[in-house]
Length: 387
Image 1: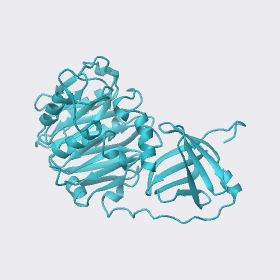
Image 2: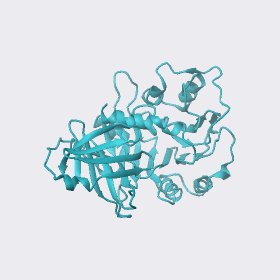
Image 3: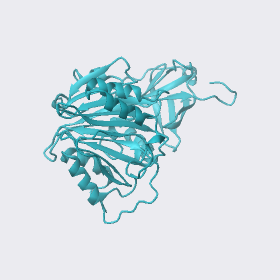
């Protein structure tokens, strides 16, 4: 089992992330609005787990698709092309993202049928082949997921200024010219908006200010989670194809580009902790390191149990040939030393780096896949109460 399969297995153990997790786990603020000059704007705050990487994954048009697009993912670029992607935008000006909501208990398929290509193909299919909210709504009037998509709602917007919410509770289409704001209450199920503090802030700012990049940025700043739980933000001018990204992983960088510029550079994934790479050449490809000899006693300092709130426990055991890493599901693999504090999995593109957490001064491990950061896990106390 290669490392992408490890992470995918663990991700799927959570059950398609945004589709079944309780609404208190992750949040999201999504805003769609039309400016006086007719430009259509969309913006999103992605609120999620601490210590987890995020990625922008670019998929140019192919002979089997109508449009090129980009997606957003957690943990690894591998999740940017399937049922676990967090949102996306295509070159036709169609975009969608998701809000967590309370699990919809009374959902029935009715006349809807399972999509023939399966759950994993639905979201990429929409981005690769649809240009309008009407097309997306029609799709979900016909098809539904075999399982899942009962703990989230899909916020959809297009270049023509049409906005909608799709969930297991129904489909809500905004009135022509009407702004659409969604947070973590079930709009189609008529749940009260008063349950979320972010919603009235966004609505008021849209009413009081001109719709433009500055206003969208201010709304995202004002509705960001106060505990630092907002992982990244993105803004799209769906009319012009302009894009802006900013992230807590790369706090001093707000990067602007266009979907055309991303697509012309080809299929690639970019990390939110290196947003500058969106503007230049693709980062240097991962190079396999060489094994070095490290005394066992220097390896033993890394032994212990490390925890990430999303991944769970990661067990590290020191052996003569390196370290053994084990996950809670029982899967384990050996890493060879490339430095005293850095170990790699031969031929798999995986590196684990040990260091100290800046804020807590606790030992932590950082997991990298093909040179891009995936997640951190902090060391827990052992039986003697020591880290």
